[in-house]
Image (cartoon, rainbow, N blue to C red):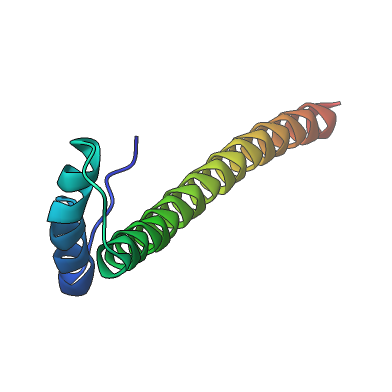
Length: 96
């Protein structure tokens, strides 16, 4: 789709969020989590949701911009076509 340019802070957040904390591994093995570990995992998931939401919002904004740019290009082409047709008709009328 559209490549997203990430600044230094966004790249750092992305890299930190790539790997789940060890508590997630513990949970997937069926081990019980302490209250602290559960809170840590919930915090990690909430942070991941925020970062993903920001990335998706940026992608949607880029897509909307691309749509508007395409609409403007189409409108410009239509205006050029109408202008050319008017100029042609004006030249033909001048001859008559």
